[in-house]
Amino acid sequence: MTHPTGVERHDFDGETSLATRGQPVYGERTDGDWRRWDPHRSKLGAMLEHGMDTGLGGGETVLYLGAAAGTTVSHIADFGGPTYAVEFAPRPVRELLDAAESRRNLFPLLKDARKPESYAHIVEPVDVVVQDVATRGQARVATLNKQFLTDDGRLLAAIKARSEDVTADPDAVFDSVRAELSAEYELLETARLDPYHEDHLGIVARPRKD
Image (cartoon, rainbow, N blue to C red):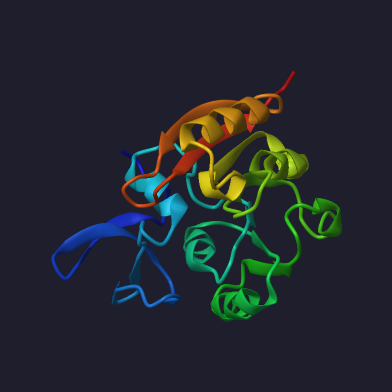
């Protein structure tokens, strides 16, 4: 399994884990400049631990939807290029701003991922859209933000079944989301993110060219 440049497996007190170099953000274990990328705290970290082919090589321009306090997006900024972090709730954005202080390539945006027109004048074309929004209509969010992706870009989405319908069978929810996404994206790989994140589906996709 290959990891992006800037992401390595590193030993933390006898436990080997994915890691990036950067200032710690969420109390993760560190060893010198290395900080542990905890897959239990990060859906993208779980996708990498599962060996999903994310297409990440390092240095990409990234739009991150649902950045929260910056747990995952800070790791992305450690090995990525310009990284735009969209978060709707003011409280976690304050912590996101702290994470951005030591990362000149991380740009927090207090915006709603369901309204990309509100940040379209700020965000340049990106190589990767990473989506982790806990809202109903996750496939629609991905479709609305497809406009920012380059033709050969990647969507890396973590679909939370309970955000779509807390009463529905997760497999049925995932089937529905896959079907809706398929209208705009070619799905390259999907995988459940257990045991790190229950009732979550990781998706790797690229924009349809037809």
